[in-house]
Image 1 (tube, helix red, strand yellow):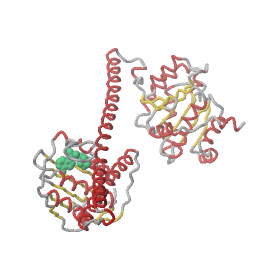
Image 2 (cartoon, rainbow, N blue to C red):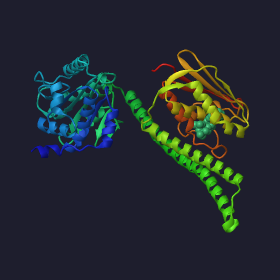
Image 3 (tube, rainbow, N blue to C red):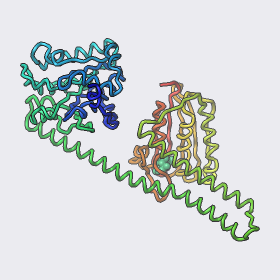
Length: 468
Ligand code: ADP
């Protein structure tokens, strides 16, 4: 018996991740056709609620409480412990929707709001409920007002500390009812997908206070939203393709140079047969170039890794006590070769130590990027790096007198893969400033730029001195 019950739940990682993005304030419907589909959504939903210390209630009707309990246990929930602590509770339709023997939408709303308020008072972070709605198929008085209730819930959930999944068995409700379920839930769980519901209508529209012009506006709005999503997906694909072509070019350049260096040495070796020697000076030059190209390659690869980490929310800081004056002097020192090659002189205005609790390695990355850019785009003119403190925050500015940036590109350059110069003229992946902004903002600081074409650029970084 127990084995048969347990087979009802199989975790679907992707669905679980999508559900984790839903939370307090959300009103979802689940339209399912069998127990597996049903439990794949509600089990992780309940588990996430318990993990977030929300008061979680499961109202069973389509399944038996034993079946639900088995599925929750199979999903890693210690049901007995959670029930004993009071964080999890089971209820039946009689204990929830039909308390007074009949269903009344307004009393039910009041009842939900009271449980949510009570949960917060008891120290829970919110209230999460999921109900198997098959009770609404019953003959009890008021069941015909189910959709009125679902519509009214949309006045309650947004901004509240409560969330719900209303579970509808597609095989037991009429198509008309399922259609109305889709009209009354802003988010719909369909199989493995949690969908922003294009067909969601406001409570006023459902409850009949709408006019034709309001419905037209709603339809046009829906079309616009849909098209906007399509466009942004198209743009993402274009950006990805462009990025791949720039990235392969960028990765290829140092590899070509490395190839040339080794071929040069091989030529020298094969020229004089067994007695071949390579002059020390030539060898040193080759090694220097090799080292430069290898570090360029490793910088490109670590930028690519950083971007994937940021994309998946995995960038974390390792803060320590850092003297920013020291760190910046070190970064300036490390760019001295590039400065010489570009013809720019770096002026450092740093008078006193400014210490804070920051991630040293990541801040080095930020300032190395700003300084490298200043030298790259600085037209060989002096570059000035200044550090000051306002008491609450440290302010670093990196100023060049180079090509500058057009007004329309000022915010774009901080986005992923965005560049304001042509890929064929200046190398780069368009990732440095995106990564820099993520690092600075994760520190609770901010980064901005002041610039005009041909008048140079000043990049300003502010970092809070105290922990935020
Ligand atoms: P990249 O590695 O391609 O330089 P970044 O994200 O560091 O990527 O910079 C994005 C774009 O911002 C650059 O391609 C360039 O167009 C512009 N940019 C950055 N710094 C400067 C600067 N100091 N002067 C002019 N343009 C700059």
